[in-house]
Image 1 (cartoon, one colour):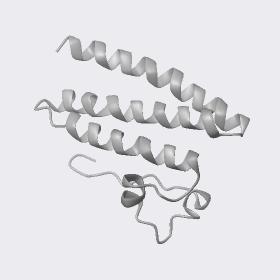
Image 2: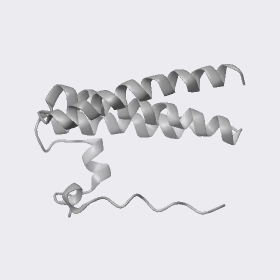
Image 3: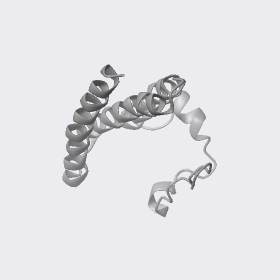
Length: 117
């Protein structure tokens, strides 16, 4: 797949049931709709996307990848924390904790790798 951009993952219909007609970028930028949990989840996206874009400006492609992945992982951690704060489903809450545990360690690993560059 050299030189190609991968297609986004295909989401199940349940994930998209309320997406039709919504401008997702605008919702993330100014989440006026929804409850407090949805607004908090959308707010995590702004920081993640701007930080990812900044990180990927590194000249070295490997460094750019890692620098982009750090805020991506932090965004996942932030989203997981929102789930722990507002979510009620035990499976989803357990998954959120797994995301936090795994991705915090991966951030440590990436930062350590960057120190050696």
